[in-house]
Image (cartoon, rainbow, N blue to C red):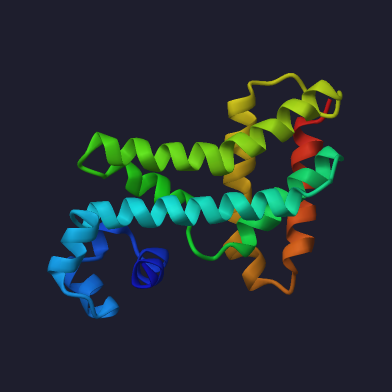
Length: 178
């Protein structure tokens, strides 16, 4: 699994071969097939674990925060500090899985770990009058796209993760504010 984290974190699913995995992990192909079935099975196991860890980071960052903008900054911070996966790449690669069950497992992990906590924050923001009454899924997708896009931008600037997260949360609330 350590080799999977290193390989899949840095490359798309289709770019990694079983040979790459076995060379990096120093585990033979028969062991990989025994434990995961195939490369797709390993990818799904990796994606579920990586998304679960991101979800744990989101929950930890949220802590006892109640302010909508601060909650959004916390979610953004969790996304930006989690370097084990690129959400956009994982979601794109999930669509490329040959088995429907694999696609569903990755999507379920994403929904449970990332999307649902964010939706909860957005719904409470609407209920408190901090955010406009908009389709929640649209707001969540806009927020996530912006948060994920911040990664390359802030790493090239002399901006901290906290500054970037706070900036994005403020802009988002200004755009979708009530």
